[in-house]
Image (cartoon, rainbow, N blue to C red; front, top):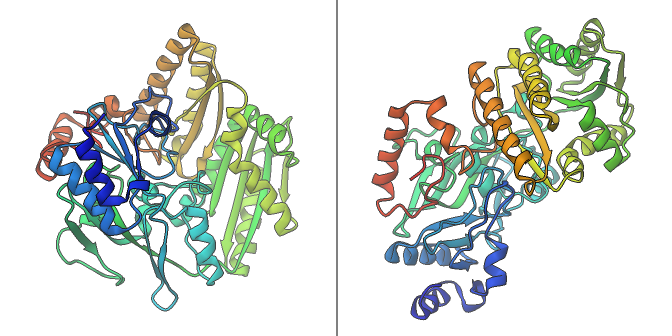
Length: 461
């Protein structure tokens, strides 16, 4: 615990009601969605204004206190687990204002604690579109999305969070405000600090305000569910669609285990006997949508699909997509521990990666449900286990090693959208190089000489 004098200083900085010191409160912010040991912070603070946020960071800097910034705690790589050295968790859930939605210049300005889905809905109410849609969008915050460079179902066509961040302001370790980017379409003023901050996982600064690009919504959509009797046919169809230069807005894969879990959970009418499903949507101009939908459907049939079912209404379309978004929740009900990974490969390597996951499951006798954004190579092999079973957990750790090794051997990456955090830091040199780690640590030391901004994440100590 911190000294009473310092706790009083935090109370003066953010207000007494926004300083949480009890063990119950601190325990609530000791973990995130990653399957990693929890670490209880020394203190939790909840600034309600930019000024209070700056003051809290300044106090941490003055006293060398490690900072972990936390939105909703949906992080899947341990990025919001506090540091062991009297860490301070700074909550952003009170910094939840949409400050501006500009319909003329197509941008918005938000605070980091705004919930992703609420922002998307507010933008849609103005006749505009914010495409990034992580699976956790109902609870995850925009600050967390930017920190992790979150993706989502629409990433194949529309890109990920980094493609929509025009600029931001953030606090350095002294609590001083740094500005980067602009509300203009073009901006090359100074170093690209915006690009540096996106995906930095809280290790280089603390977000204050974020400028996000908006776009016009598509005129129409057409969604389809494609059923396959063999997993190989489904995975090869993904590669074939991309090879034919067709870019759907979404191209999602579910294996049989996931299909059955989702149907049991959501009762969406999914075919539980299917070996695999592809959920596909195209959008844009009505004529283009009609043409591309027909092309995709015909290609799926050529690749061996046993059924191509086009959604006949918006209600039917939404029901299927809501079921897909429930995949993780559905799988998590099956066992006490759920390990969700996101190793990502070039899209042409999807068939090979799915075979690897199946082989790993057999090799270690594990239950692995696989779903994900197959159209951009981002699969989510989800291992269902019980961490209290030490023998099985040892197999899980070996299985994860094998999955990452295979992804890298196929020219892929450790993470498509979940980040590195604590969970994958040990693999980073395998994908990059010693020089990359050294360069990154040198940058970290220059910007954070006390090593207090989310220490230990990404590049280790």
